[in-house]
Length: 606
Ligand code: SAM
Image (cartoon, rainbow, N blue to C red; front, side, top):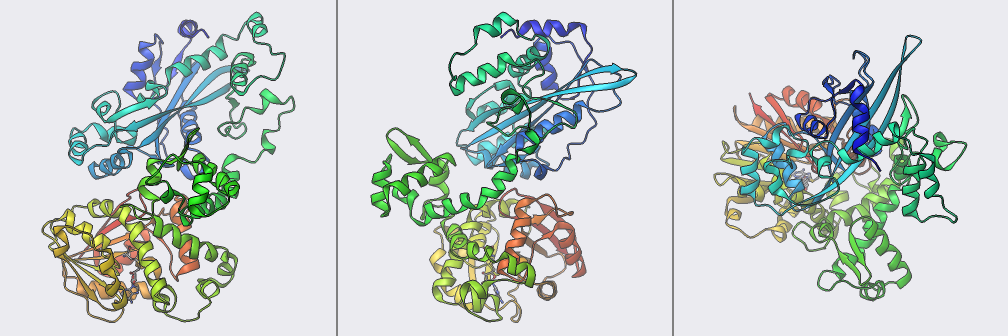
């Protein structure tokens, strides 16, 4: 395909780049394109949750940038938006150094994707009316970071480079030293997929000659690969990604534009991929839970690759069923499948082994054994407006923890294992979200296994932490004690936070505690904390934060529903916490959105 001549064709036209990014300008200038830069004032505030995929979000942002109204009519406007996506979450530009640290830690030692959405808007004036024809596409490049030391990450953050870069790094400069390898277009990571852009332009401005099309005619059904080529060459010049303003939904990955396959386009009648994923989401969760429960990942810890039959024997299951579950796990990126058999991916080794350092096994088992059946009673919870523990556990009672979650020693230990496994993966981000070095004593109310307390003691050598929890929990907490000198600064005190006097401290912590209780008990707790806290002392609230309008953060909204079915509480937004905390004498309420399982709010006692 001719790439360079298409740039030459544009020399006579008025081309506008709707982006202030100097990196994009460099790439296009070096390619020989002449253009004016009219930076877009479009604020990148589209609701990410409204898009089924990260690339759809990037494409829409690019289109909105390119479609700004008050430009003097150019021939072509180019808009672009680059996003970094790690484990399904879009990472924006970091707001400060701790935020950059959070992002880079997420990328460290792992693979992530960089998507650039590009919109090419061709403008024309007909009867005094501006007509805009929009072609959009996106390009993905996969980037793998080396396993980097903390020192190196901080050295890089202190260089100042991460702060204006999506995902917190710039591959074209110092950030190159973080990257082990990439798969895809390098320029796409820098901010503009030049090669694909030229191909798309060529489709728009250099339609293939009929004799070229003839050469790729097929006598039989072409292979999947050749279908790709066919759609490139036989395109009618309106681009396979082309869409009029306000046209149909973006094409889900792997689906061809219906126009290429069907003379009577029915794109609107296809359910969007996001909806299908939503419908099927429960199957994915259950497949993961089952693989964990049947110890599929454990079976591959010491010996791999293994065939489906070998794994089936180890986990005492049928070969047929095991093979199907293994393939699903491989498709999710949890297992690697080769002709020699299956092995754990890094993701599975880190999080899914039952005894790994960052194992989520306890949390997954709680989801399988309790949360799953609770969610199947969601309809009752909606009608009754309360938890469904009695229906699932078969016991009645009025004390949330004593009667339900801690109904037997086994249940209590399962609960504690689940709490430990989830907070363990987020503890460092929680402990470092704010600089807490001015505090010398902290008390973690409902601190359970002491997992966060140990991390705080590790991060702040001048800090002593007391874990305050119900007596039975304190008795069992020693099973979760890590090794390390900081354990000497962590102590455990039994008590009831609704009745007993709190240990003295200049920082109080409530981590995933307030969301368990109805408003009246939240007020009771905050009032007791406020009375114990000295002026100038701190309160750290650790919870998943909802966005103020309660329509964006899917994870937190689902977690709130989760609270409905298994406690008497709910999640809240920063504004709601600020209001609550100020009512109880706290001021200077600030939050860090960690992007992990929980966010962190810090307030000062006035
Ligand atoms: N903070 C821990 C974490 O994030 O992993 C545990 C959170 S768990 C959802 C709530 C904790 O509050 C449990 O450890 C529970 O035992 C404790 N708790 C519940 N009621 C309590 C009470 N009346 N007094 C003290 N602790 C209580």
